[in-house]
Length: 382
Image 1 (cartoon, one colour):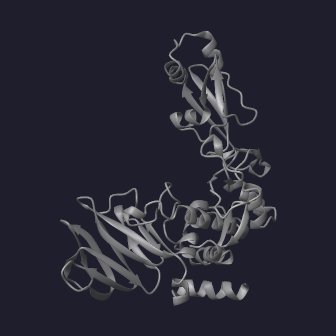
Image 2 (cartoon, rainbow, N blue to C red):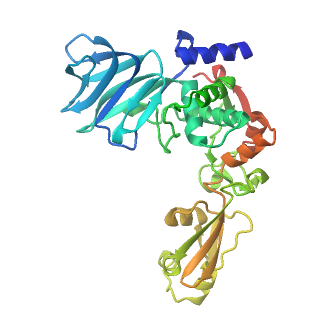
């Protein structure tokens, strides 16, 4: 296994044919930005230009500047602007890019560029699976370090991709690079961090989380911090035997365990009054909404035969989580909350704490997805 990892890591870094044999991920980058031009360089680029009615033309260059021009993609690879219906780019190594607002990122793999809408470019990064996984771990975990933490997140990211790889297939890509899929901004500039991220991905190469009794993938939901208690999937999504309500002591005493938010009391009260068609002067309602207590996570807030999901309050008022209590102070209602995110599946800070305490990635995954089984990609039929 060690020999296999070392070879896989070198193949990824050098883009050898064996690395290209692994599944390819097609991820739309800058998915929430308007892309009108895109620049790339830093390695040898081979651009293939496709234009209806003509044979595809291949150019080799060290830089490539692309932009939208009418209904076409226009590019400059050799000092001359030319047009194409779409352009495919292959690279000898990681590609340095410049996107919207001058954002600079480094990406592994190659690219496909095509017109999008009336004026924009669709930019798709075609990247070997494990290189994509390394990029997701980098973006999703940020400052949180730890080999076992990264290995756990790598397995989660890989499983999520496997389960959702057809999400945007009709649009010409599989996943996006934002929170609608998994955050992915390519590879970090720090070469040491990059090497360690790739090691974490390849040391778990191909591992996926499956449901205990079927060949279906576990829905590997994750969040920043559970606050000390995990929510069952059914509170937000569909039920899952591996996404359950259970204590999570590893998420206590972490940077995002507790939070406080102040909201004008009139806004808070008005929301409930309008939702349930009662007057804001109702004393019983006022007492209830200004003295909410959640010693443990609850799905609903109930009053006088009415109820509303705490998750809807979280979404309406932009709260870090749905686990909070309230107290009236002057003209404000003060919310004392716990956790950050929906609280389902892996708590990233809890997993970080587990890794600091010496738990391996398998133990981390078992804690947050109890009863799920690990198996290799080759058994998934992908």
